[in-house]
Length: 144
Image (tube, rainbow, N blue to C red):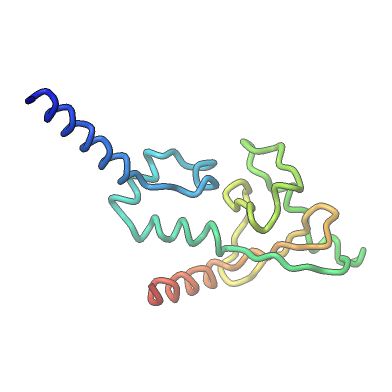
């Protein structure tokens, strides 16, 4: 009887601990380890919230008809900024639903947005300025 209770207790404890595991966005796992994310989540929830917010809100997509030839130099192809560890990024990986800002070495400006073309698609991606991202994050935190 004691063995049955002991076994039940262990199984119950394991079930509870597995339910407490944090489910991370898969895009975060392309840059960070689970251990690192769990540590940040436990030690500095605000920093973790910012990382998640940044992943989803540091950019936005915009449809365009066509970039005129004379303006092409102002809209570099975002694929040219792919991180060394992710050189084989395909255009299909750049959809609005799966885009991962952490796969790119993009320069962020303090006050200015940056616009990138996305291959030959009739779409651009606009990277928000640091100031705008921080302001949006503050508003997001207040609305929680």
